[in-house]
Amino acid sequence: MKTSPADLVLTPTGLRAGERRLPCTIGRGGLRDASTKREGDGATPRGVHRIVGMLYRSDRIPRPAPWAVPIGPADLWSDDVADPDYNHRVRAPHPFSHERLRRADPMYDLVLVTDWNWPEAVAGKGSAIFVHQWRRPGWPTAGCVALSRPDLQWLAARIRPGARLIVR
Image 1 (tube, rainbow, N blue to C red):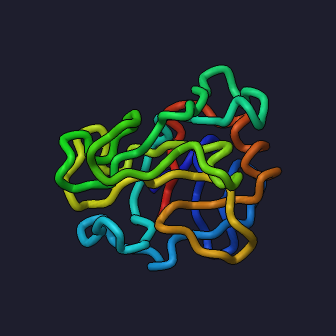
Image 2 (cartoon, helix red, strand yellow; image 1 turned 60 degrees about the vertical axis):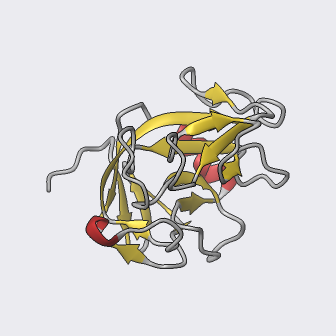
């Protein structure tokens, strides 16, 4: 597959962004083929995923890019396979299982949203594959790709909607 300088490419030594290599972590379940990815497996799906959104905590950081959207107190992400809005941003109160986007910790202060299993979500194929801040170096995610805060902010200032996250 041919890549472009705008692509983010997951490599064994980090996330390649242009000429930079950014240390990162992936899901606790390792890498998984898209055909076997399941909700809750903790795996980062292989494939080409487009960046379709950027969310940020406006009470904690300045807008990282003109197209970034603030995360409000009622913003959630549905992870319930029975929810008609599965793998979509929803608002509280929400009767189905979900993840809060406005967290007490800084992990979701800045989030790049991918098109994994979106917008036409298949129930059970996995939700919310984001690029976000890591808890600490080497600490795995629930399936997302995570970076240090400075690297994530550097990336957010340069990335454009539609950029590709390539996970081989």
